[in-house]
Length: 152
Length: 152
DNA sequence: CTCAAAATCACCCGAAAGTATGACCCGGAT
DNA sequence: ATCCGGGTCATACTTTCGGGTGATTTTGAG
Image (cartoon, rainbow over all chains, first blue to last red; front, side, top):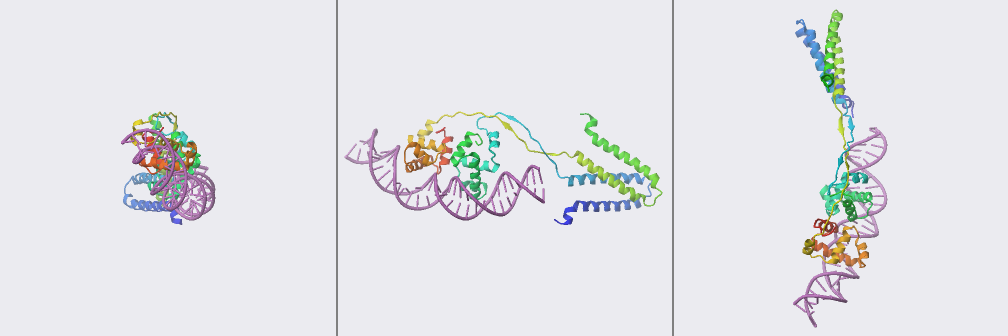
């Protein structure tokens, strides 16, 4: 990353400031004849640079993400997935997708096609799933997953 | 929440602006004698109000929130086998046994051991089951069987 | 930036599953 | 007696699955 890229905001700010000062100089000629000119463009400067400051801050300040945990009581009806069990097993979103496809009776090849990834990727995912579910076959995985209500 | 509390930033900003203008007026008396006074406090205004803008933005910009975690409770479901569907499919008693074992995630070898028959026999049965259920894999067979309620 | 987890893909290899075909036995229906 | 469906088993072959290992890339958190 070059110097300009890194400091582009600062540089742009500098140019903007310079431009504004030139503008002020020009305004000096035009309005110097006016009696209350000083208040006029003092306010103008204030306004413009306040906006500039706001823009700068919003542009430069990295958005500070605040992580909030919301606990929600949900009563489970038959045919609802058990989020707790899911969290406990530590299955990733992708792994869950694969598991669901498995439950539909799809072969690894078919799952790969559906998710637009390679067969090997599905193999890796399924191996991880078996590991996390503590089983050795896809049929067992599906059976266990259904019993734990982590899939429909 | 009162009016002041809600708009305190705006109000403070207003007062700050007013104060700055008074300051400028005062500066006008003091520095009007100087030749380049205009550039001097133009810059000063610019700087101060830029800072003010930044402060404002940082103060007002609400943080972006993230992540939600939900909790759940469980409950289970009943199930009844559909004798009609069973009859319609023409599955034999033996085939049903095999199908059920499949649903439990057993391997052909394990099923063979449980039913005291050879592995090849299970293969024959499963092939017949797949044929009758019109599927190609044990996972599909189990899925379909569950959906048709011919197994638990 | 750095570190770790997640996701992606590859290659090898053995085990399991599935396909195809044929054979034997047995009990009930024709 | 003959035929047939269900159950049993076998051989041979192909395909899919699963284990083990390693690599690259992306992404989020610290």
